[in-house]
Length: 171
Image 1 (cartoon, rainbow, N blue to C red):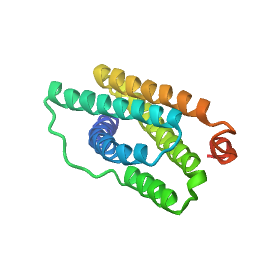
Image 2: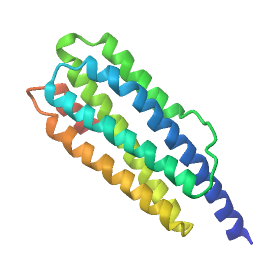
Image 3: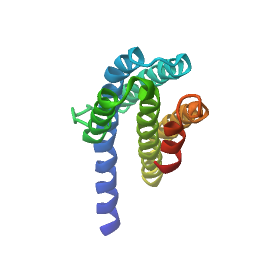
Image 4: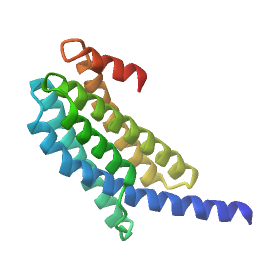
């Protein structure tokens, strides 16, 4: 009996987190365009544009999953993503123009790592609950984030700023 209660709680947690992931992707979709405008590195702008497309794909896939599973997404703000965005915006405002791209790169890396971790945990939960479609979706979202991580890592080199390299090593 106790295991069944735990599974119910885990399933509820997964549903709750699913709504928060939708919120996080929407928050990013609203923030990235302004960040692109304030980025001077063409390479970083291209990666950010690609990331915006990935975020839109994530939104579409999460919404489709809700529809397919006949779930009604509850509007839950994602406080963690809001804090990451707020912190990135605050740092951008207070960073010298010459270091703004490095600051943006570091902010994106933090957001990206957070999302990879969240989607990986969600895939584990979904597997534990034998929710194959959810597990596949979360693994796909995690892999998309890993692709962006590779691009951001390649960009974190001294011609952007030594801060960008250090931020990757000590994050």
